[in-house]
Image (cartoon, rainbow, N blue to C red; front, top):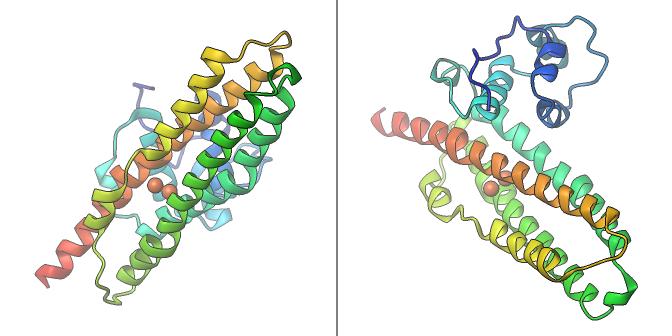
Length: 230
Ligand SMILES: [Fe+2]
Ligand SMILES: [Fe+2]
């Protein structure tokens, strides 16, 4: 993680990417187009109709692990949800199917007995991810949207805080364990690639959960508290 100063709207987009290419996934999930030229982060966000404060809050949090409280008050939870929703689509429609295809291609016929087990573990894992995202899409996000529009509901963000578990990561650990411990293959390149993809996706999903736990939940808890006082 970086220890240098946080990025601001005046920094160049290319410098941001050069500093840590992991930010590319964030740019893709804000649907920001490529072809940046000399644009600053502020210019790019403005042209694309993205709240620059929300973008910087997420970027700086992912790069440093720290939350910029001065940004927090200017960010609407709806902007955070936009990013989280796009991330859900990215995993379910692109990343996980891509890993599944690579995993199938990496399987070795000599392991006929273990191959179906590996694929079952992977598919069970994707089912869990889908279930987890569905809850957020159908219960949490509509509640957040209503709350910001002043429409009352009987849900509270504390219910989400208590139920937001790491069941997903545990399932993935089992899959990695089977491959690492029991899958010897004479053509390992593809399987090493598939494994690297799985580790990458795991790290990415942990960051995703951190944004929900450390940005979205506190932001909503603040709004709920303010509404109680009024
Ligand atoms: Fe999520
Ligand atoms: Fe989540």
